[in-house]
Amino acid sequence: MNDRIQTLASCLGIPREVSSDVVVLSSFGNGCLFIENHKGIIEYSAESIKIQSRPCKIQITGKDLDIAFYTAEEMKVTGKIYEIKYYS
Amino acid sequence: MNRLIKWWGGTVLVELSGCSPERVINLCGYNGIELWDLVRKEGKYCFYVRRRDFKQLVGFVRKSKNRLIVLEKQGLPFRLRSYRRRKVFAAGIPVCLIILYVLSLHIWQIDFDGNAYFTDELLRKTLIQEGYDTGMRKSQVVCEDLEMKIREIYPEITWVSAQISGTRLYIQIRENTGILTVDESENVPCDLVALQDGVITEIITRSGTPMVKAGDRVTEGQVLVRGVVELYNDSKEKVGEYLVAADGDILAQTVIDYQDRIALEHPVKWYTGEKRYCLKVEALGKNFTLDLSGISDSGIRTGEKDESSDFLRKLLEKLPILKKIPYLYSFKKYDVVTTSGCLCIGSKLTLPVSWKLSTLREYDENYAIYSNQQAISIAEENCLRFFEKLLEKGVQIIEKNVRIDMIGEECVAEGTITVIRPIAQSVPIAENTVHQEETNN
Image 1 (cartoon, helix red, strand yellow):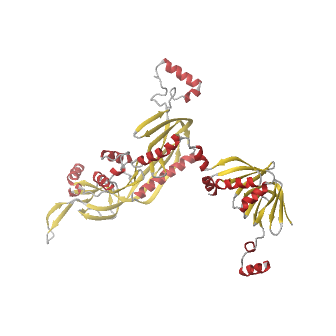
Image 2 (tube, rainbow over the protein chains, first blue to last red):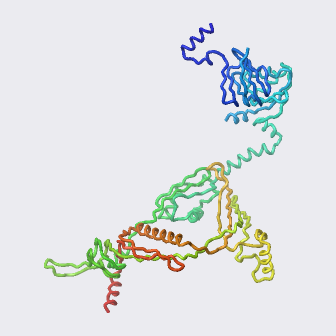
Image 3 (cartoon, one colour):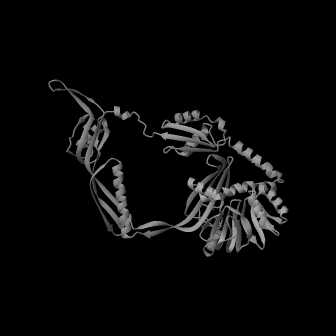
């Protein structure tokens, strides 16, 4: 069913991030990361942020990590980002 | 813009701690509560939240059994809340607005534009005499009446436009200084005589009898056009003559002597760096002056011949720092730079408070010496300026023969300029005849 919706959306030219609620990460260098379509925070510390998303969880490790803003749809992480890891 | 919106609604900086603060953050996210500047410090979360979302946040914290501490409140609602007990301040706002409104009903500034011949001060005096002054009510100003009065008093002003903009009366003026008047001398019989020696290049006679033609050499005072018209009958016999005011355009090639001397030694101002100030404030028609200039006619405040004055002079020479005290020492030579301004809200609402700050800068006059090159370049500039002035007057320059030399301690520019220029000058006939008789004798 989901595959059919994806096929229809791609035929109509709708971007994937709109048609499905998969997580979208946009990074500006290693100092700023936008995360769209997340499902919430699992854990947060200055060195590591774990985020629940679809289809997997994301772990961001770094130094002095801050969340510049946080809404239901998107969040912005600032600080020195060393690693972005996807895991389930 | 976003910050302004947040400030308008109010924001709260909170500290969240407990067993699962992430749950509260996620709840905020699901319920559309925006959080920003989220920082984790020592196991606690600090973040900003909007004032209107704060109550909802407190509910989530209670549900999740966490702790919430308010660290800081920012924004307009909290600021207003803190001022609610200050009754005088609260009353002051409407009083201030009322005062502003009342003041805005009056004229507090009168500006003129387009006047070159008539100064602002002169026009201001005239307006005061006619009953238009700063401080008068705007409703009393009849712009049409004011325009008419200015035009009546000054016929040279051809167009006036008065308009009120905020608390400012703005008067635009167009002057016509070159008013055509009937020249009485036109009716007086006169000759046209040469102003200086030269060769006539062009002669157009409008009235009178031409005595010279193009190519003639004339001398200073020679009659060019006689103010007499002779009448002849059909047999070409002279039957009479009548006098007219000779008129015409006569151009002649003449030679102008040019000489300019520039002394190498010239005075220069050397600023000592000492400054004094004089502040004048005018508020509601009253003047307040704070004079720290310490200016008197003599160099020193006290009488020059007194023994105390001599003592003071010696003291000042030994301790120059005392010169900074205006009442002990006043400047002998100084420049004055005055800046003025007035209190206004925006560009249109001028309030009846204005000031003038005069800065006095002391200088010593010393002498400096131009280098030869500098002196020559100044002489060249002067020469070019002289040529430009001639051209502005409508004089046509045919030949320039100016030589710049260094003679002793001076730079001398000398030479002749051959030009074509009008040389006619009106001379009443009676006077001219007498003059000619004298020369004949």
